[in-house]
Length: 289
Ligand code: HEM
Image 1 (cartoon, rainbow, N blue to C red):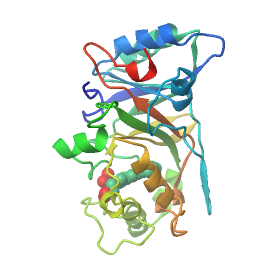
Image 2: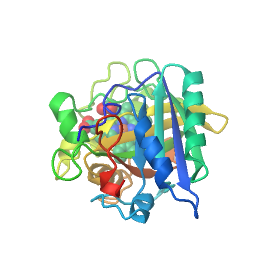
Image 3: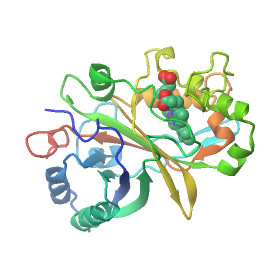
């Protein structure tokens, strides 16, 4: 079983995140088999814990997104059953592919949420800061992203969390305060040595966790009538790295809330299991298909 090749490349120019919920009284199996056969470089498929359990599958470590409330911050859950992350250059092609997938999945599944993401410059958040600098690379990226042995070999776990920014507020802050929130200097992306404890990169320093909490981030900005922000997207060999980081960001460890909450907040949150590849398509043996 091979890792899904769609996960590793840098973010594309455009993408659509389609999340589906299962409709009761419909057998999801035929639709899932068709979806599995379609996975390619431009499509990442993730399956939620409820769907997997309903099919009698066993994916160790998979569970639904757990909402959290820290002092002064809220982290909601919006768990659904299927994620399709459709990537490409051309928005029209992406929209057409999304429509095709939704048609194939109906009536067993209905669209729960649709979000479009895009690349900003060379990969920046809309706050202007470079996002992804400390992503692991090469063999370290494979280790961080994929299960490397056992029955789930080649699988990954993805977390999608849409954040809503208040950029008017952020941009009203002096540059030094903005840099302190992120923990890096906007001008040259250098990490601040004397960053405050709430600085985002201090909260999430991957090697500071025990065990270390490395992940592959592939987040994309979004902007529409509902506002603007970042669709945080991370892949890892388990859900533990995300959960450890989110717990620290929300102040659960020491009461210090990540500086990001000063101008942004999560409005969705969901975890999915990304099956490995087998031949042409996804290997769904873990869920009995
Ligand atoms: C509003 C949402 C977010 C924004 C704008 C944001 C932005 C950034 C930026 C600008 C950096 C520094 C450059 C880099 O290494 O990529 C960074 C680093 C990082 N972020 Fe975020 N981030 C967000 C949410 C999250 C969340 C929810 C997590 C995990 C739960 C997370 C985990 C990380 C990690 C692991 C690093 C690298 C830390 C290190 O080892 O140096 N981020 N983020």
